[in-house]
Length: 205
Image 1 (cartoon, rainbow, N blue to C red):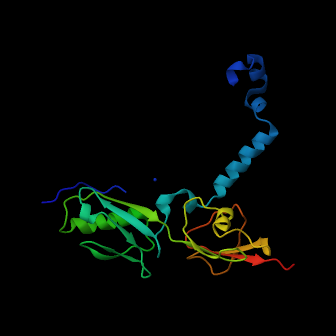
Image 2 (cartoon, helix red, strand yellow):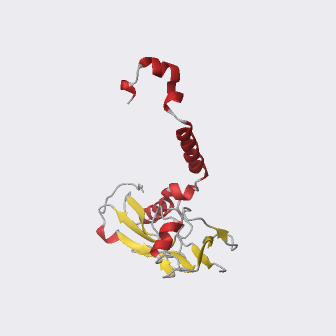
Image 3 (cartoon, rainbow, N blue to C red):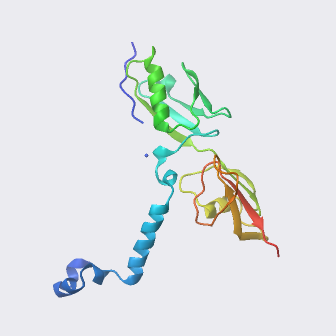
């Protein structure tokens, strides 16, 4: 009988005391530094949760995941989500995983393996390769490119060979996969998401 166990799933010392007493923390932080801290906190508060929390990422067509079952080499495989939102997995066949987090996929596979296959399987699921993003318009090499966490629009344009001479850097738009069909304006430091379709417009002159 196979036996495995349960599922798991990424200067002050030199300053005179009198100066410290008079200025405290305010004496150390110039207005410019305080403004920088405030700006950083605002950016952190406004950052989308999907960008900072990989556990909240939901799978979709084109994503490749790695499934590892401890002690079971034949059940430790890579699987790509197909156009129907399913993966093919040994013993269990097709599993619908689109829209699920990796934790939810772990739980699903664990439950199914417990049902007549393994005793207390330990399953770990990670995203091995994210679905690509697409960039079109006034770039030198339009097309699809592999996404990686932390990718910005500036980096995406670089992957696409840079802007053409007629590119309008102030007229770049994105349609997020699974979101509204209405394009949203992007800025060069904005994050790119898996499945994004980015269009760089040409300038009029």
